[in-house]
Length: 277
Image 1 (cartoon, helix red, strand yellow):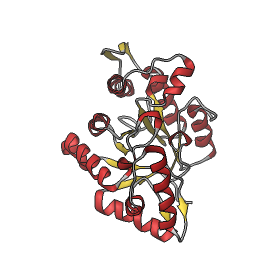
Image 2: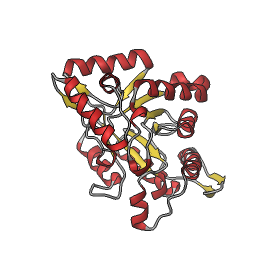
Image 3: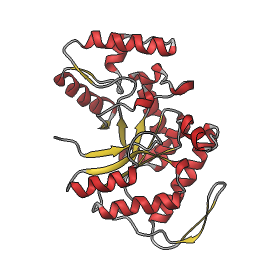
C-alpha cells in the first residue's frame, strides 16, 4: 500500500517491546523496512542497544532504520525509579550514546571515555549489514537536539516542542516554526545538509480525511487553546507539517508542496502517539 517502513515506539506502556516486534515484522515481510521511533536512550546502555540494532539489521537483511532520542515521558521514569535528569543532561548523554553506537558498529575494538559511558576495547558484535551503520534518525523540537541531529544523524526528525505536562506547544506545530528548525539544521550541518533526510510526523491530532477541512481545523484550534491557552489560526493548522486534515488529493498536494518548498521527504503517517494528544 505504499509504505516503505513500519516503526515502533519505545514506551513502558501497553505496547509490544520494539526489539522483538521489529524482528517479527522483518520475518513476516520481504521489503518493508523496520525502525524505532524512537528508542529511549535512557532505558538501554548503548552497547546493549548496538547489539540489538545490529542483530535486527542482520536478521532483516539490512532493512533497519534506527531512531533514538533522549527520553521525555517523565511518568515512565518515575514509575521505575529512573532519575529524570534535566534536558541538557539527557541530550549530553544521548550525544555520548550516538558516539558509542557508531563506534561499536565500526570495525574492530572501540574505546570511549566519556562522562556517562566508558567502553574499553570492546568489539561490538554482530556488525550491521548496512555500512557504516543503519540510517540513524534523531529528532527534536529544540535547537540543542536538532544541532546534534544535524551533525550526526542521517534522518532529522522535525518535532514540535513541548510545554510542561507533555503538552505540545502549538506555535511549534506551524510551518513558520518548521522553517526555523530547518534553518538551525542547515546551519549546524554545514556541507552535509544536502545529504540529510528531513522527517515530519503527525502530532496533537489524528489524520482526518474530510471534505470539510476548515471545520475540522477549527476543532483543532479549540482543542489546542483549551489545553494550552495558545490559539492558532485555521490556516496555520491546515498548513502545519504536523497536522494532516483534508481530502486525499489535498493531502497529496500538501506532501508534495512540503517536499518542494522546504525539502521534507520523509513523512510518518499513522496513529498519533496517545502520549502527545
